[in-house]
Length: 559
Image (tube, rainbow, N blue to C red):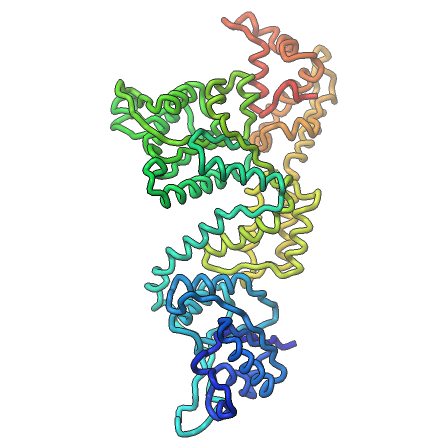
């Protein structure tokens, strides 16, 4: 079966004009598309403004006379100024993004009509792959003394590299357009709608610390940057200096350890420690006058927590090795996948710092709790990746239906939340041929995701290893070290995925001891009976607690 032909173009308000019978005696570019025997146009999409509605109707009726098999479809466009690059590009981009591209279709972009600005914008959209079309031009008969309404046409392959300079001029407008889209958190989930509404009020009315709590991949970092963008927009539009806002500084506290953590956050002076060959400004100083986002704040050590509390409450801190304080003023935002309330109870997080952070605490739902938002997030990822790659990616309708059905099923666990979805869309768009994601691509991705998500459950292989080991009668009985699903869910995913068999046996034994004892102290006494006397400050319960923490486990949640 031959592909159908679809042509897209502007209504020519000057060249296509004509309201009496004399119009048939001259060349009109849009009507001429239906006058060529070798060019069979199945669909003709015409962009026009509402004020040209009468002309559009005449053109549509004339095409129906000369080419009755051509379906004419009109599209209203609202251009404030057809000579404004930013306005025209944004309007045509929105048209291209919302256009229903069909398989088995050859697209031609008619450039003869429309302003020069519109033509250049069409070039950019075609080059970037947002419109998978060839460029088409029409022209009148070369002899003006001959009446020829048919004229000529040609499909051309333009070298658009000469428009690189213009494309750079558009870059700022396009980037601003995408930032607006990214900041627009579209959701169908009522609870999340309320959460975003509350966050928006807090972001624009308060400078108190904000705490974002949620599972890994729930979107804390992205939301933090959007909160900053919201606050920045208000600051830039205000003439009141108290709303002034400098830059956004983000740091993942899980990457900070020991002196490095102190130095990165608070800076140091030359000679403060071995290797400190020069002074260093810390991130807190960099955030002065702006917003500091400490992701995974629950991973900070107690010493860093104490210094951070001082910096927040007193707006000053001492760099390592310095007796001179640095005065700062910033808004603090923090994110964590830990329950800081439990961390305070366990002595892992300072109660006073938690109290300071707890002015505004928001709990972000996981992807599984917002499945109704999956379609919008799929669209967002396609648009984001398309913007980054300057391409237009799309699903076939059948492939989209297949992917969404799996994504919303019980088989899709989305253990990494939105990070899993982002990774999935990267794979799909990278492997798709001709930028179109088809059924085979989706089926292969479903198999990949299913295999990836099987990893925690495959820890049942530990049980086979463990059950094959001999243990003494004084210990616990053989064949009794089964890591149940609840335990697996609580354990650290990355750690369990790479744990040695030796540690697997040890961990299974410790878990079984915990299950068989009433409390953590009793289990600790059983496990550390022989080594207790060798320690200066024996605390069996604390030793057991710290051991379980290595695997993301808690005594009270075992069993």
